[in-house]
Amino acid sequence: MKAPDFQYCRPGTVDEVCELLQSHGSEARILAGGQSLVPAMNLRLSSAELIIDINRVKELEGISLSSNGSDSYIRVGALVRHAQVAASNLIAQHVPLVHKAMQYVAHPAIRNRGTCCGSLALADPSAEMPACAVALNATLVLQSRNEGIRMVPAREFFFGLYDTARNEDELLVEVRWPCHKPDVLTGFSELSRRHGDFALVGISVVCHIADGLINHLDVVTFGAGPVPRLSEKAGALGQGRQPTPQLAHDLAMVIAGELDPDEIAEIEIKRHQTAALARRVLWGVFQESGDAI
Image 1 (cartoon, rainbow, N blue to C red):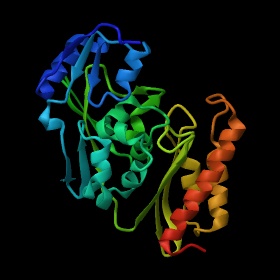
Image 2 (image 1 turned 60 degrees about the vertical axis):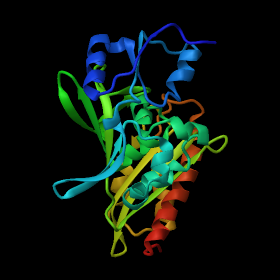
Image 3 (image 1 turned 180 degrees about the horizontal axis):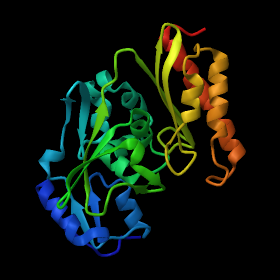
Image 4 (image 1 turned 135 degrees about the vertical axis):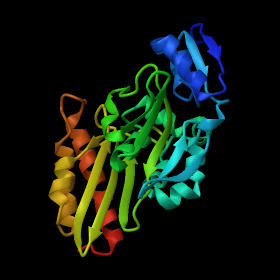
């Protein structure tokens, strides 16, 4: 099949993109990598009156280290491809969780064109970048003609299946990944039918252990519901505890138990997969600390 007829434009600045979004609203679609948009349009699952190709907008390129007061972050522009993120020394050094997750993202041809910000904007519940964004509470930077720049924490960005806080006239111009502190540990893994496919279930972990006790733990489940799910119960249960195999098991059972039977089919299978994966990832993180018992 082929896509329905549409108009096409290729602006050169963010301001031009925002002007087009304002004038066309819900009838416009942004084209960066196009690895989700183009197949959906060809299959007549999506349509648009106007395609806005942002690949000439130079200000949307690049990966850089920046700071906001005492906090440092890695800026990833809207045109940065998955392959560039995977190869970035800045990402590997300062945001190791994202570096670990990149090995699971799609297949080489898709990574060479698909973008990190495009994955965040699409908000597929089985994608890796939204889960990392929630685990790290990254900042998504949106821009529109009327409102200018708007910063949205990742934990307030994802509402549901392909549903986000981005307004129709806004462009996601960049994501800001907070730099990891030296003593922060991370873990990431997923189950899929074959490597590179969307996750059946995945786990993203950010953890800090000091003096043999956990003093911070964020665990995000994805692929098992309409949005990446941050487990507040797991964070509370782990607080102040020793990192042991039993704790990894207990945390995994709590995380699996939070899955909502109304959201997904085959809930018991999903719970079993989630518990097994979470236990493995958490214990791997605990062992990295050197304080595991």
